[in-house]
Each structure stands twice: as C-alpha cells, then as structure tokens.
Image 1: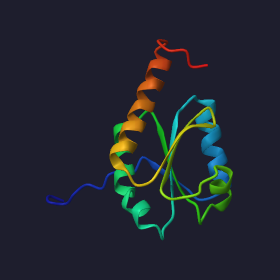
Image 2: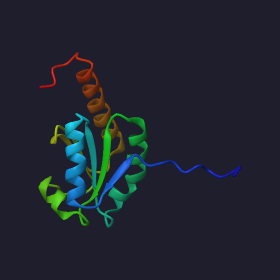
Image 3: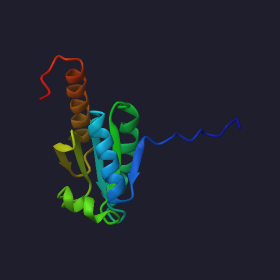
Image 4: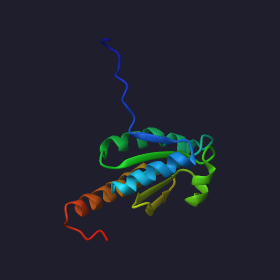
Amino acid sequence: MAGHAKAKKSRVVRIDSEESWDFFIKQATDKDCPVVVHFTASWCKPSVAMNPFFEEIAMSYKDLLFLCVDVDEVKGVGAKMKIKAMPTFSLMRGGAEVDKLVGANPGETRKRVGGFARTIRRCKSGSLDCG
C-alpha cells in the first residue's frame, strides 16, 4: 500500500431526486444545521471546474451540510430555488436561502461560506440573536 494516496471520503452529498433534496433539507432544518448548495450542470465548464474547490471547502467546515445539485438531473429543485445560471452557490438556514452567489469565484465563495459559518457559530454560542 505504500505510495498509494488514500482516497478522501467526500463530505458533499450529491442530490439525485427531489425526494432526496426534501429529505436532506428537512433533516438540516430539524437539526438547525446550515446548508451550502452547489447548483451545477455537467455541460457548464466553470461549474464543473468548481467541484474540487467545493469538495475542499466542505472539508474545512464540518459543521455545515454541503449538497450538490445537477439542475439537469433534478430540474424541480433548480426551478424551486430559482436557479438561472451555473454555478450558483446557495447558503441556507432553516430551510430558507439566506445568501446566493452566482459564478465561479473561489475567493468570494470561500469568503461568503466563512462568514456564514462564523455567524452560525456565534448564533449557537448565544452571542448573536438568530431569530
């Protein structure tokens, strides 16, 4: 086994149906777990290029749930979330979108997810009104 890289387990959940979307969003809402969603499409090169970045950022924020939705495979979710362009990154809490970023911009995405995570942590520690 020496010399072989150990495969990392992904923290990104691939959504393959509207039912799985509903399940994970309900679970996250019930557990007060914030969600970061990458809306993508296999034909969109910038979106596909963001996949490794999204995997990497998911490893950095273990207290957030990371979901990936291919809007062509799960059309109903893309329509429900009003996704018009790929990639789109949606930050959700309590089943509702609280922020959205459109475009392949790793720096801005990292900044927004980091700020979102810090806000959630302050909320949970009681130093911020989260109503």
